[in-house]
Image 1: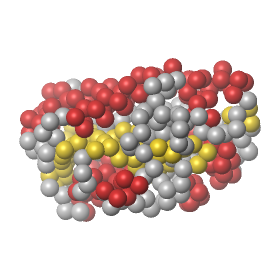
Image 2: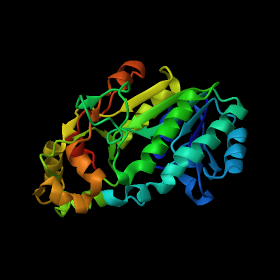
Image 3: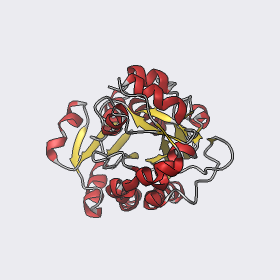
Length: 314
């Protein structure tokens, strides 16, 4: 099949392109500049310069590629600071790519006769924070993410609604868990890891917030699976081991050679972390990957963050 990977030089896209080429697909990968296309071409794909926020640019590239499948991996995550208080600011460009960029790609895909569209979303903090500690795709999203993440939640809702609700498109939404691995904010040299190593990432309250993690390589294999199989819909792409902050954070600090995390009451942490940050530490819910295992015949190489934090941080 002809596959267009929009965002082929990003965290997932750079790993996805070689997988698709090795599977025999005719792949075109995009980047915002010619200078960044070397690795795409080295992997055996065609390279194309595209600005995901300029509809004419998107339309021209998609028309030239004439893809059977579009994979939307456009993000702008290189400037993530790990400061929950400025969450929407950190994700401002990514949020535009999830709204304006998604609309441009869907419109161009329909015009080009594309039948399947695979898009990146996120799971974890967007989940409803009442009831079960581990959520499925059938559970609702929260209506109160915290004032710092309102725009980011709206962008996630937009991409999911647009991709799964566009007539003529088989829409797949992959809700990735918290990324870690080489090149990520949560890697041995990343910004979040640095905060944890220096003891600046506390366990708040009882550390009861539930997280689901995802190694970036496993995210790529899930996207490759969605190109080839499965029924349209929303899929949680996470490991098998949802865990509370009180378990994973001290373990990660140990693997990073850092200080044991301090413990702070929620009221004292709120000025430092904001509403979203306190919820991430105390109230968020994890996600189940059962649907992806069943429908996409996918399973993560790093089944648990314990193994991943020990051997896969990069």
